[in-house]
Length: 300
Length: 300
Image 1 (cartoon, each protein chain N blue to C red):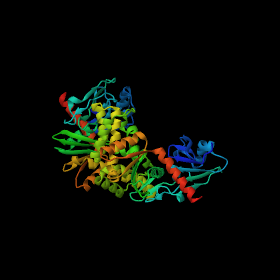
Image 2: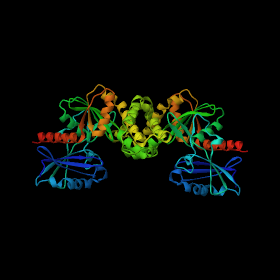
Image 3: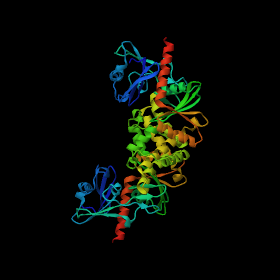
C-alpha cells in the first residue's frame, strides 16, 4: 500500500498521520511525539517512525498543520494575517528533509492584530469545514483547551477570538483547591445547566462562584461529580457570555469532539441559537486535502 | 525568657509562632510545617520544635488559628455560622496534648450557608482588626490566595465572600500557556492599571482577555513583566467588579501584605473608594490576643 500523499496533524501533545489514497484514508497512526517534547532534530525521525510504511520509492507529499509550524516547532511557518482565506497554496512552508522520499509542507497559522490573537491548526479545520459546507457564511466555534470563535464570510476568516476555557477547567479541577471536591467521570446534566445559566446571567461573578463549589462541598455535601459538572457549566457559560457578539443572530457550526460539542450545542440552544456540528478529525482531513488541492493547482 | 502565652498562626503551608509577654511579642519563629504536609500525630512534635524554648515548668496557653482546625488538621474545630462575632471564648477548641506543659486551644473558622462560604484564620485577623480600630462598621478586604470580603457590623461578621484571585494568578502565570510569556519580578504600573480598568469595565470578557496576553507576546512583543502585571490587574479587577456590592459606599479596611494591599487600595481609589490598610500579622496577633482575653474572662 503506497499513499498518494500523507496528512499530518501535529499538535503540542500528539502527532497524528493519515495515508491518503484517491478515495480517502488508507491507514492512520498516532503517537505522543507532540511538538512540546521534541527538539528540532527529532521531528523528522518522529514522523518517519509513524509514516515510513506508507512511503514508496518516489517522493510523497506530506502536509502538516498545527504547532509543528510554531517558533519552537520543526520549522516556523509565519502566521498569515486576517482577514484572509484559512489556507492558501502559496503560504505552505516547504521544509527540507534528510530523507529524499519526503516532500514536506507545513500549513501556517493565522494571526489577528487587534485584539491580538493567534491560531495554529484550527485554520485548517475551518478550511475543511468550508469544503464540507458549501457557501458557509457565519461563525465557527472550535471548543477545546483554547476554544476559538471565528467569523467567516465569503471564504475568509474575518475575525476570531480565543478563550482559555478548557485549560482553565483543567487547572481548576486538577490543580487548584477545588480538586479536593472534584472527581469521577459521571455526568450531572442538572449541575452543568445550573453553572451555565449562572455564568451567562452574571459572568462578572465568576471568581466568587468558583470558591462556592469548594464551600458547598464542605458545608452542604455537594458531590464531586456535581461540582465538576457545575465548574464546566460555569466556564462554558463565561465563554458563551463573552462570545455573544460572535454567535448572536449568526449561522453557527461547531467543530469538535462529540461530547463537548453537544454541551455547547445544548447551551446555545437554551439561548435560542441553533447550531450544526462537524467532526473535528473530518474537518482536519478535509482542510489538509484542500491545501493539497491548492498546491496541485499551483504546481501542476 | 518564659512566655505568658503563645500565639500560633498555622496555615496550609506554614507554621508561625510568637512568644507573648505582658508587653507583646518576646520572640517569634516559623517553619514550613504547614497543615498540608502533617499527619495528625505530627502536629504536636512540629509545634514543640518551634516553641519548646519558650515553655516554663508550668502550663502555657497556646492559641492557634488557621487550617490547623480543619478536618485534615490537628483537631477539627467546627465552623461557627455567620452572623456572629469573629471569635468567641466558648468556641475555642481544647486539644489534648502529650506534653503536659501545653494548654492548647484552636480558634474555629466561620461558615456562611448561602452563598456557601468558609474561612479559617481570617476570622482571627478580623477580630484583631476590630480590636485595633474601635467601633469599626464597614467591610474588610483580605487580599491573597483566596481573597475574602467581609461585611462587619456591631462587632459581628454579617456576610462574607471568597474570591480565588491569588490562586488563579498563580495557576495562570506558572502553569498555563501564559507562563511562556511571563516572568521577572519587575513591576509595570501602567500594565497593571490597564488590566484593572479593562476587567472592571468588562468583567465578562475575562477568559478572552487572558489569551490576548499570550498573543500580544507573540505578535507585538508584550514584555514578560507587562504581561504579568496586566494579568494581575485583570484578576484583581474581576474581583473588584464582583465585590462591588461589598465596597460601594462602605468604610473599607484592607488586611494584607503591604505590596498587594497597595494594589487594592490604588484600584479602589481609582473607583472613588477610600480605604485604610492594616498589617496582616498585626491583625493576627491582635485577634489571638482578643481570643486569649475572652478565655481569661470566661475562666478567671
